[in-house]
Length: 322
Ligand code: TRP
Image (cartoon, rainbow, N blue to C red; front, side, top):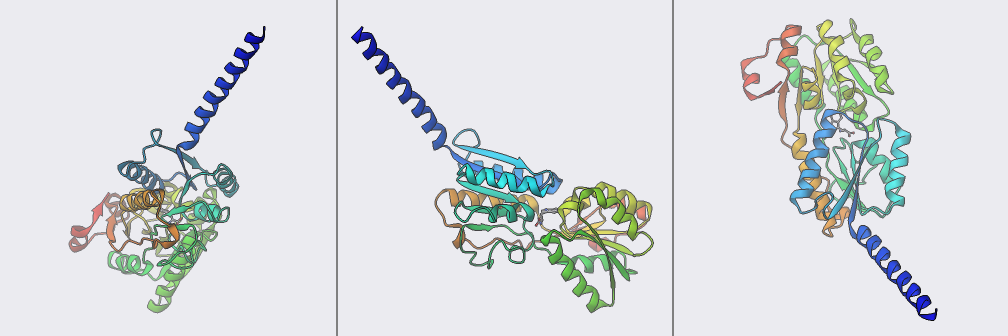
């Protein structure tokens, strides 16, 4: 009887050790949370390149790290819930793709390292105090582009532009930064800006339609809300023979006429490289925010043909075309 009791106790201790060991193993895997505001082609490209670069640096999902990818479906309240889940779950690193995601995680933690990705205006969006020396637990990559450069290209392709329709979500600080540059360009060059702002993807159709007949061209900054509904914009603009100038290559692929933009695969890779450095012990606050000087022309020749815009040979030769 005594013997049976002792062996039962021994068995229980053994089971406890095994279970604790298993938990310990699961816990010892590094947890990486990826938070993305919405599914649109550019953000998906960035995420895939980031994950591939993490793997190339030895952090492979399901092997030695757990990558928990969560998408907020464009909903700010989802952003907060997911950010809190990552923080309460004591994740080792958070990668936040696009400005609204980055703002959500930055406001939840000052401890867990955060690598933000493709944030157009990290300082103006309150993510870091400076690009050179972010300080704290936050750094990342920025896709800052020049509204002036895009408009200079626009004036080469469609020189008769006098009035520019600005289509964007005024709640996206990444867009506001670029629109301020657009307004400065317009003021300096005698052009007029007409604004059509949205608060959600469902309003994009109406906002685009409101510009038809009132503007000579549409300008869309690197705006997540409009990018998610880009095919709708294209349909209306092509019908109205309105040139649409955009802030990113993916929106040209989706029917925008042209941009002067950066390469988002390169940006995604850089995000992954910075994340790997932090996982190896680097301090994010001491890593400068990475910006990209290499901008290239992207054109949609199908759209050009449909709206009757002829592309000068010299521009065509330097451009990536869709
Ligand atoms: N720059 C955007 C931000 O700061 C994110 C972004 C990356 C984006 N690529 C894009 C938005 C393409 C629209 C289209 O949130």
